[in-house]
Length: 415
Image (cartoon, rainbow, N blue to C red; front, side, top):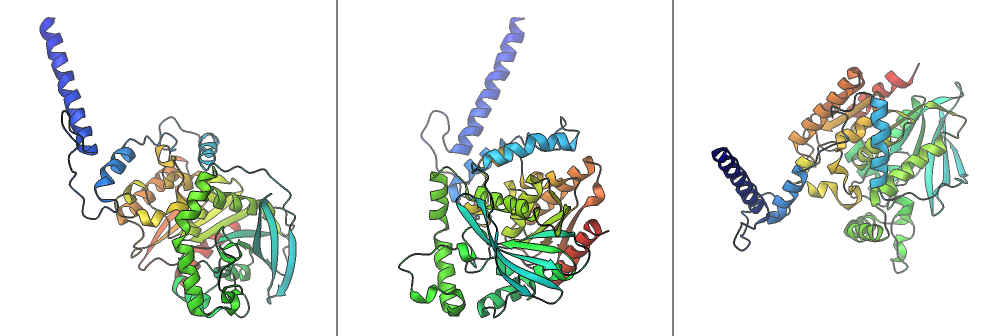
């Protein structure tokens, strides 16, 4: 008996010592001595600090992933997981009357373009374009078209909706990112009602100052050089704006996601829209927004996420700059990963499109995310309702990708 106790205590001591050494190697503090310098991983964006990130992420339990054994019913899972994600956004302003006001109507041939403003909160009034196909049927499927980041802040909704006298800088941007097309208009021509808003910090909601040069006051009159200068200024100030939101008790992601959810609120009030056939689609940060709108709002019945899918853990070493302040949901990774969040759309149809040469995301992280989403849809009994597609190409939503996305939406949203 004594021998057994000694043996057990010896094993326990060995395990404790091993754990102590392991923790010391992670945090640079071996037992009984001063902190030692860590070997720096060459491509780690935070250098010698990366081991702390890696160790913290390794403790994530993903307790709210549908792949946990305790979850068997997908709707019961969503009832538990959604409120947690929403709480992590630290942003829950009161509901309000949208007080929508249409300020312009333009006949675009087979559809009408409305320019309007509506409130998403008592403090925020967003500008939007709404495209309304003409003729029958009176109630149609609708798509929330979510514009990208692109380091291009001067325009937002106009990246996905065509307007007259388009600025040459915007035209050049669309050529690079969208094959020169305005995909919202392409969807309207196919019979969809389409809405696009300016995301916080973009377009009419971009950051401006009283001392800005006079030439910056009218976007359409700005030179290409002025547009580039304003984009650089906005890019340089994102950390400051994010800090302000954090200190005010909110998150940038929360503002983004709530604006998008309240956009669905408004869309559902329109008599031209079938509320049972609402989808969302977006590239890059628009894809990030689409992933969360699809996961958090049960009124979204189908989604296309383009150029924004990976596991977060795979991005910690050398893709942190792809995440940035505005896309941080503090504490999320302890409970769910990005593929878990978008999978809350299940069994609703989901297409994720990725470019094989997209340098924003690690290939292994993209593959792992696709595998996890597929596993969720398999467990939910709807394996045919998820499609992950990889194209040869960079970070873009080109014409070929668009046609693939449109066909996917047609399959699920049209009779």
